Image 1 (cartoon, rainbow, N blue to C red):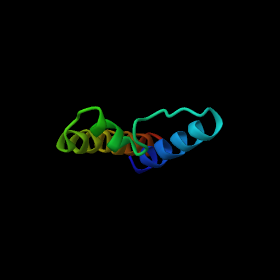
Image 2 (image 1 turned 90 degrees about the vertical axis):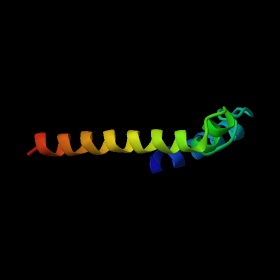
Image 3 (image 1 turned 45 degrees about the vertical axis):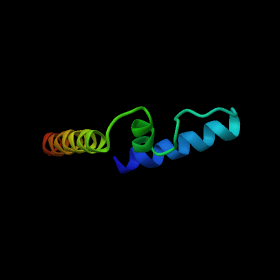
Image 4 (image 1 turned 180 degrees about the vertical axis):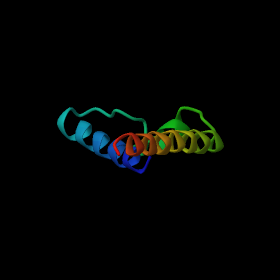
Length: 66
């Protein structure tokens, strides 16, 4: 999720610089979701879920690769 936060900033800056348009309402993705009307607890919970799924997939790939 940290990489998604950084990537959203990079995408926003690149888009504004090269195309003159914004991709997100506000640069970090969690602020963009809050600007869309998501309450902060919902954003946090979704990030937890995505992080857990990514961790499980990472462990599965590591164990399969043995």
